[in-house]
Image (tube, rainbow, N blue to C red; front, side, top):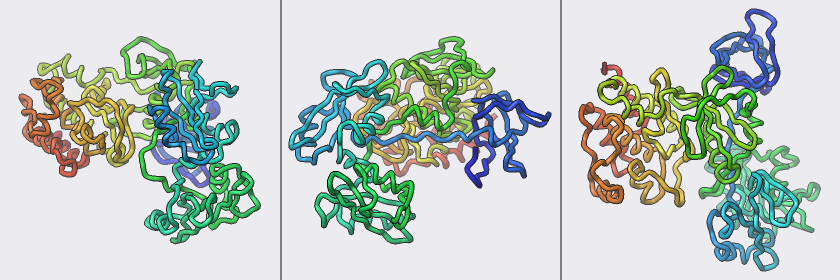
Length: 538
């Protein structure tokens, strides 16, 4: 159902929550779980005109469907990745009881370690991954993922009181004046942060924006409870923040949006989020036809879903690899563009499956190599370039950085439409990242040197993709050993124009390969140039 007063726009995807057989020729019958695209609204807010996956159109009742919701990543600021026991102890040894972190296990591959400060020491607990679940060694609780484990640990099992010290809204020991400087430039009502109290050691302060000002509330910590008004008491900061997020309860406003502490954090997503968003589809509705490839996470099949050909990525491991798999899926729930491969849904079970639209002609690099100059026309090339750039301009408008743009990640459908795929590395905004292996020949110099990624580093990769496109699938830098590519590029070397490549396209490549990211064009500007070329290419 739509929220009160909400009107679904044209193009909105809704999912059926009940069967609807239809009662007149104008109706569009559907079954529970069917996905329908809204075409238009009507004078009656209870009815919309919709189109199903087979292209049939008709009237649908709003109370029988719900809007598909975006699935967002949840931050895991407490996850420190691969650090040693000694490094964990160095971070925690002088912290208050209950401050914790989770890290990769050094001795047991695939497992994790929970390290907690307690009475001046650091205790370590092995988190065992088995049978697609997680458990703390010696404990009785089983968890689907680390987020679930930490939530339960913070509220119940481990008695952690200050574990929330690392949460995104917690800014630690900053002054009142500094909190106001952080909050005042933005000042939407309900923007908030939590900090340690400067005047009352052991207490905290909630700072929240309201009507252009910043109000401060002392959070009193007494008898192992936390309170603002000495009427409502909470076990920890997490419970307190959750309470005032739902209800102002005496504050100037309820807490609406946390002001996040700066710094990139690990993130995760839960299967429950996909279910709540209407993205889980029944496995009985999915039929696997044939194996068509092997992806980063596992096998890829051609399949059938409600009389529609689909691609099915499946994954057997539900732990670390599953998180990367689900992160890609969560990014796809946020995206709607004709040149992006569309996600259809997720299948739960022992084997997680990601279902997307089927792209019958495979990836661009194989398409180019298998057909060559005798089949592929200049019109096809400029079409593929423009399709790809259109998708990237859309991602740019959402400040989403792809990080792995290359011809191998562009798929072609039966109508020769190119679509960008593989969002496993995608992230929002400009950011730095630690470690990771990236394709050297496609990755911008600043990303290789400083791990700094942005939409402008994607522009560099797009220049390489254009070179692949007009060289009919050749590997970039064909005469330079891989280990020498970075030195050559930083020294000013640029690949020559491929044979038959229009001069205007080669100029786009050169501009994309500027060493200064700020001097590279934006995708929206490249798209204008390519659109003009498309109009004059036959």
